[in-house]
Structures are given as C-alpha cells and as structure tokens.
Image (cartoon, rainbow, N blue to C red):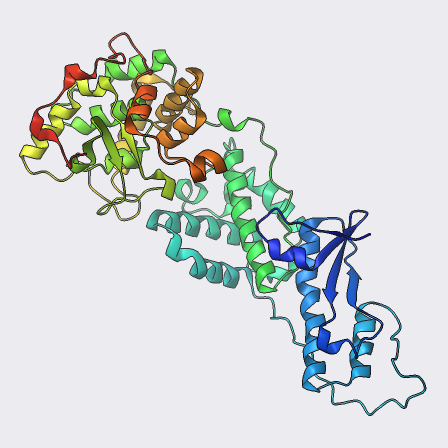
Length: 469
C-alpha cells in the first residue's frame, strides 16, 4: 500500500504527488478527468523514483512532474494524438503502451514538439553574481563586504569552472585546502598567491567554524544551482568538517575573577565614557557590542516603572535580526554607578547619541574602534586566551542566568534570540519589564553589585524620563 509523504520542511505541497512504499518514494499523479478516455487503463500514474531519501525524492519529482503535465497539456491542445500521448507516458514509465482500440491503424504522427531544453549551466562566477544580485537587498553593507571576500576566496580555490562539473571530489579538495589556510589570508599576505601562502611554514589554520561557514556558503550556491536547473544535486551535503568542540565551547565566557579584573582595570569614565560604560553594560545586560555602541539618549527610558535599554533600529541603527528588537532592564548596579546621571547630563545638553566619541562607518556601524580598543585592553589586563573576547561578556551574562535557573525563554528575550516555541514564542507575548528585571537583578558578579530590591537607591531626577512609559 502506498503511504502519503507528509513533509515536515515547509514544502507541504510535495505531499500531493509523493508517496512511499516500504520506504521507497514514488511520483503519483492523478489522470485529469477530461483525459480519462485517453488513458482508460490508468486512473493515476505511479513512477518509482528509485530512492529512499526524501530530499532526492523531492528533487527528482520536481524534475519529472513537468514532463507528465506537458503530455496532458499537449493532448488537450491537440498537438499530439491520444495514441501518441499513451506512448509518451508509457515510455516515461518504462512500459509498453496499451492501446484503447485494438487493430486500429496508427494515425500519421503530428510534427514532433521539441521538449524544453534545460538552461545551459553557467560558470561559478556567473552563479555568484546571480546569487548576490538576488539576495543583496537583504544584506547589510558589512555582510555584503564579508560575502564578497568569501566568494573571492572560494572562486580562487575552485576556479571559474562550469557549475555542473563540480563534483564531491572538488568539494573535498576545497574543504581540505581550507583547513590548511590561515584566517584572513589575503589581508595577512596581500602580495602572495594562495599556493604561496600554503607553502609558508608554521601556518595557523583558520578555525573549523570558519571552514564550515565557507562550505555552507558554497552549499548555498549549489542549492541555488539546483533551483535554477543548472544541477540536480548539491555536492556539498555531508562534507563539512567535524567539530572537535561543542557549540558552547567555541567561545569562552569570562569567569567571575575575569569580570573583577575587567571592572578594576577599566579607565575612568570622565574623558572617554564609552570605554568604561560599554563593557559594563555588556556584562550586566548581555547586549551585543553594536547594540550598545549605537544607543541614543532616548533609548534609556522607563517602561512600567522599570528603567530599560530600548534596543531598536531607529535612525541609523541596524540590528542583527528581527528578534533583536527588545527591552532590556537596566541592572541596579549600572544605575548605582551613575549611568542615569550620565544620561541626565547628555539630555540637558540636547545630545542625541549616548557615545559621541564613536564615529559611524557605513560598513560596520559605530563599534569597530571600541572593539579594537577592548581587544588590546583584554590582552594587556585580562587574559591571553584567544577564546575570550568582548563577546565573552555576552556569554558570561547568559551562562550566569542559566546557572541561576532562569527560564530559557526569558534568557532568549533578554539576549535578542528568537523563541521557536509555538506556545511561548508565537502565542505568548513579550515578558513585562518587571519580570525581566527580576531575572537580571539575580546577577551578582562581585560584592559591590546592588542586590534585588534596592533599585530605589539610584532613582534619577524626575526629568530624566527619555520617552516615558
């Protein structure tokens, strides 16, 4: 018995014409009612796809189905006779045609209708240009620049060959070469070819994460080729490098001792307040570097009586994802150390941005200068561990809340991550600020932190409401 194939990948329309029997997939098409007299022995058409793999079956079915539908259309329009239609269907099903009328004279065939020819396969560079043009509207300037450098590297390694000629052997060679190349090869060795770079001694290869990111991008190009009909398969599938570390080990969180070192070594906020406040905000809010560096004075506001960072895309600010838009309560320790007093001063001066010393770049916003400074500060005062960076402050925030038993959905909302749960993500609305504040105030890195229930100590002047509730 043929069982329907119910798709769990979002391509549910495929269930209409895919069926399984003992794990094998079949293309199933019902003969249209107006053509039943043309195919009296067939109520439906079944074609074995000779595979048990759902992805391969979907691809094969999408390629074969139009040919059957073409026969139906040509028959209706009178371009081919009923007998020719039965013959074509039989050939596609690898069986002998069954004539509906015995001992009849074969009519003169109509002029053959040429089958549509698939588009000729372009070169890899042409595919890159096509793919970029299709997706660039959704990319930020930084993403576009990053992808251009990645595609240049892939093109130099693979060569501008016809995409239909790229097989798994080519992908394996690409993967193995990437695992030997250093990160930022062009930047570190601008006057050398990739072959010359690979011959250098003592190379520190790029991370496994970066190698797999490049392979993922290459796989996206190959999927684009399948959709456009240039290929029938994706040769990159299953050829990524096996990670030796778990996802939570790819970047380390700062320990409490590290946090104490950071707070002790941070410069005074008097001359360059951003160098003091940006790391402090990161460790007590979990916000991204770019989110903090782009803050406006008006983004510090009270909502339902709780002081919050309003993370948004107003003005020239750009966020990583749609779920990044959120309210993050301000930890009492930040208030006690004078953050709202700074905001009050800037508000009186009619300042728009919180950190006027930071200059925006079209490619990557306001954060590069601060990020570079923190990198030097981190190596000099905190640690030589390359897995501990500014982003580790975000890891520390998330890990601290996790170890304190805070609900994952609350941590996700504070971090600006999408909540994939149907119950709490789709039907449940955003947490109220007071609920998130209860979670945030559980964080206590050092003895000087202000515990929960003491936020009234740092109540700012009444005219500091930057936007109200």
